[in-house]
Image (cartoon, rainbow, N blue to C red; front, side, top):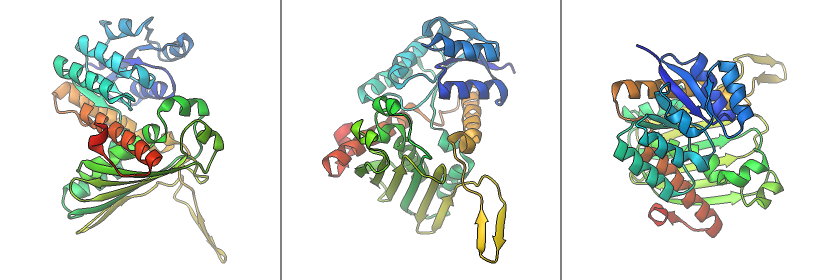
Length: 336
C-alpha cells in the first residue's frame, strides 16, 4: 500500500517535529509539501526533507501531491485552514488547541461534518503507553467505580513571555492536556470547575496577565472528582503523572527516569532524575498518534481524538480561567 502524502502547514517547533517524524519514523506516511508564513522556516524543512515548499496554504491544501493535511500552525489560523481542507475533501490532523474561541470551533465542526472528512486532534498524551494503560485499567473494570483522578503536569522552565501573551494562558496552553486526560482516563464528562491561580515563578508572567502555578478541581458526571496541579517550573525536570482511584483499586502512571541506574553507599542512595524536555518523554506517543491517524484514514474507523474531544478541553480551560479570576465554581454550561 502506498504512503499517504502529508502536507504540513506550519514549520515552527511542533511542525518541524511532526515533519521529521513523518519523514523518518512513521510507516505509511510521507511528507509531500510544507508551508509556513516565514519562508525561511519552510525552506529549512523542505530542503532538509527534499519536499515541495508551497507558496500559500491554499497551494498546499489543493496540491495533487497532498492526500492529507497536518495543521501545525499558530492557533489563530487553525479553523480557517481546517475549513479550507474540508472544502478540498482532505483528511486532517490538527494540533490543539483548535482555537481560543468556541464559536470558531463550532464553525470548524460544521465544516467537517458537511464535508464528511476524517479529523484527528493532536492530544498526543492519550497515546503515551503508561497513560493509556491507566485508561485501560478503568475500562477493564480493575479500578471499579472511579472516585478520584489526580493529574500532575509541571514543565522544567517557563516558555517565553511572547508565547504566553498569545497562547491563551496556562489553562489553554498547558492545562488543556490535563483537561483532555481527565476526560480520557475517567471516561466521564466534567460538570463544573473550581480553579486557583498564583504567580510564584516569574512576575513577568503575572504582568502578562497569566498564572504560573495552578490547581483545578473538577466534578464529573459520574460523581468522580479530578484534581490537576500545574507549574511552569519544576527544577528537577518534566513531571507528568496520572492516577485514577476507585472502589476496586488504583491505577497510576509515573515518570520514566533518564536511566535505571541506582547508586547506594553507607550514607544513602541516589537515582537518575526525570526527563527534562517534552520530547524526551513523549516522542513514542507522537509516533503512535500518527499511526492511529494513518489507520483511521485507511480503514474509515472513528477518530481516536474527535473534534468534540478537541472542543471539550477548550471549554474547560475557559471555565477554569473564569473560576480562577472570579473565585467561584463555574459550570461548564456557563461557557458553552
